[in-house]
Each structure stands twice: as structure tokens, then as C-alpha cells.
Length: 479
Image (cartoon, rainbow, N blue to C red; front, top):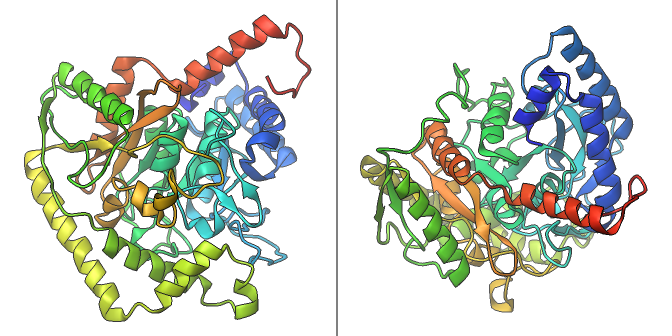
């Protein structure tokens, strides 16, 4: 069930937060040993929070639609009472851990039930999810495959029913890539919309955003985590209203620029066909769709400059003996970053400014841009890329996500179908800065018109197979 569905069920007394939390914990017990989506599960904390939420719903004092929703947090965000280990042996602080990050603090205030912390590659450095400390995270669609990254643990948890929604981080696609690979919804909001503390290691590239089962849920979660926090000096003032307001307005009359490859990407044919069909659906709903040519050249070199510099900064506090325990590929990136001059970094920032200018001019004509989220589907778990030649530089296989971290525009990934092998593909919707509600509106229109969720469909298939083959299933047994 989505968070919106849970809230309706709680209000009607058809389901309780304790029952929903127990179901999520049962799913974790059953599926996490194979998927490795969690680094920590706080069962006692979760059950206690669910009981408190249940009492509020019974008394009519619930705190909103997030109250009682089983929630997970990527292990890059601080969580009071739980360690934040960031996938690294370098983090050996014994605590006490007394501080919540802004998003976690807002979730507690909203009554969400925190289940635990989800896996990340070391310091969130790459587009798949494995680390020296916690090993390989796997996809609920096929455990032989990766769920993507770096928010792969969060996406795997949501797709497998091990929590209803999650907060992820996105420095180059780390919310949207795993959403595309797992058939979930991932939203990278406008830069600085979601407060962050401490600041992300990759400076202006870093964003935080929802991973959910529906676009409506993404709007509801964004309402919560975008509330201001004084620890983030760049956060905007409080916003009036909800991102869910107007989300059902449809796309009739909107102008969509559709780019299959931004002029420089190479897509798997099945992914390109699924995205093209989704664009055709939006056109049939009344949107004005125009296929557009190249908008800008591939900014990968500037992105790599900023990314490597950020990794060098992340590892700077540690000595040679410490970094010997770091993921060797991450260390290679960080060593490149140490050689980057201030002038080279500012040149990369200038590329971001030019991209932002080009996209601002683009959006004078087009309300949104649509591309594939990723040009491929999920590949082998434990590999850094879909092919050996595209594994050392993870940005080489995520060409459509990182440009919009550089421009700090809102970008949404919505599932748009399955390949013949039964793997989900993602549709990316990009809007002008601060047009987050418009982007969500387009994604919701597609989602509602198709009336199909790959995760829900997979869950129904699993349930049918279970009823047919195992009439009696022991609690906690994988199905």
C-alpha cells in the first residue's frame, strides 16, 4: 500500500499503524537476508512509534498523512539513537548519536515510523550499492541484479515492501537511478528545497529526495522533508500549501520537449521504445509533444571534476593507514580530486552556470523535458557498470541524470513499463528550477492514466504464486 492508501485505511479503522509496521518488519525478516537493503533495523523503536501513532489516529489527533507510515532512511543521514556509518570502515565513532538530520527530524515530528537505516556504497560515491563494510545490495526483481545506487538500499526496501517510503540522497542520479531499476518513483527536488545538515560532501551537486511507490506519495513526503531547518543556511523560507495541491490537474495544454538521448547518450532499444510509448501516452492526454535535438554537449568532464574534488574533500580528514580500508575505486577518484586546482573547479562551476542558462531558455518554450532516466535496465549485482568499458566511470552509463544535479533542477523518475525480460525502465521528467509541483503533476498524470505500478503488479504475482504453491506459509518465510 502507498502512504496515501495507508492514511485512508488508518482513518477508516481498516488498518492500524501497528499492523502496517508489523507487516513491514515481517517483510524485512523474510527478504532482507537475500537483498541486504538494511544496515540496521530498529524493531523495538519502530513498534513503539507505531503504537504512539495508533493512539493518535484513534483519538483523532494524527499529525497528517505521514503519521504511522513505515519509513526508512539512507545511512548517510544522521538519525538520533542509531549510528550513521556511511558504508565505510572509516566511521568508527562509538556515539552517542544524538542528532537527526533535518529530513529525519521532520519525519519524527510528522509521526512517521522509522524502521531502520538502508545501505549505501561508501560515502554514497557511485551509481550502484555495495561497500567494503556491508557488501552487495541486490534487487527485489532479481537478486542477481543491482538495484542501482547510491540509494539502492532505500529503493530495494520500498520495492520489496520493507517500508512504504524512504529518504535518499542524489548527487548525480542516486535517487533516480535506483528508482528506475526497481520500478519505484524517485524525485530529486530543486536544489536547496530539502534542507541538509551537515552539507553534502559534493557541495552544490548534493540533493535529498523521496523514493516512494507513487508520485502522490513523493509529493506528500516532500511536504514533510522540505520544511525549513535553521541548520541549513541556504534553505528557502517556509512554503505555503502542499505539493499535492493541483497534482491531479493533468497535462492538457502543457508543452513537452522529448529528447530520447540528449544528443549524446546510447540507449538500449527496449528502454528507448518504452519511454517513447510513455511520451505517446502523454500526447494522447492532451500534452503538446515535440521531439527536440541536442540541447547541450555532454558535461561529464565538468561533473567528474566536481565529483572527484568532493571525494577528495570527504577523505581529507583521514590518514594513509585509514584510507587503505576504502573502496579502491573510490580512492582512485579521490586521488584524482586531490590534483584538481581551484581554477579547474571554478571552470566546472562555470559549465554548470552555462547549462543552467541553456535550460532556462529551453523552458521558455517547453514546460518540461522528458528523457529516459537511465539508458539501460538493471545489470549484475557487484558490477560497477553494465559493461566492463562502462564500469570504471559510473557517469558513463547515467548520462541523463547528472546534468540536472549541475543545474539543480527538479527531476522525477517514474516507472514506464517492463522489458521482455521483465525488468522495469524509468521515464525522467525535468522542469525549471522551483517548478517541482509541475514536474510531479506530469508524473502523476502518466501514473494515474496508465493505472499501473510495476511494484504492485509484482507483489500481486508473488501473492498468487504463494497461494498456488504454498497453502500454509510460516511467518517470516520468504515467498
